[in-house]
Length: 114
Image (tube, rainbow, N blue to C red; front, top):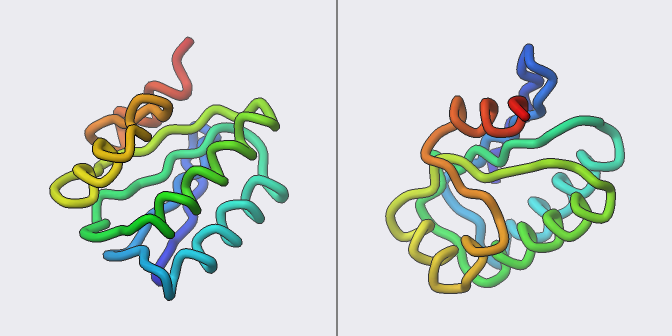
């Protein structure tokens, strides 16, 4: 699983996901996201613009990140979801409990204004 972490000049941490999160990669994704919360501060954008596929294991990893972020009082949102990956988040109902915006720039703006 390819993941890249970028610190935006605004102070937002951006996690850029690769093409897929499945049973083989979800544990790695979850570990990386939870570790990020432990070692960083400030808001987080999960940039899923390249994500083409995920399954229930991927949803679980993101949900665990969401739960931990909320426990820590951290702001976060997902950006760039489209196609099948967006359908999965909508079908599961996670789009109703997590902020999803069209792209990274809008996500950063949403987390830094107000």
